Length: 121
Image (cartoon, rainbow, N blue to C red):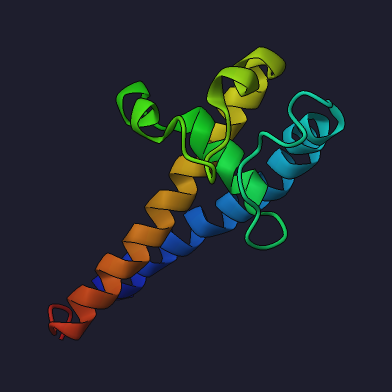
């Protein structure tokens, strides 16, 4: 197994875990938030089906300094309201999903760029 295949297998494993966490987060946390009238329309813009799951995960995961910049944007979920209606388990689940999703996405992009430059040849 080459170095490129080893890196790709790690990225794909993390991506698979992120897919499982995405479904769990949607079924456990976001479904609960959709049923609450106060949070129903505060989950951010849903470009495609399931995008509100990504909005909730991002709102519960990014640092507070970045959150303040995005706070009043219409596409972003209302983090103050989400913290009122989520448990610690929900927040940990959102952070685990979001950062594994980000790692796998950026890892795949970096791997493609390195392959394009011929690093693995």
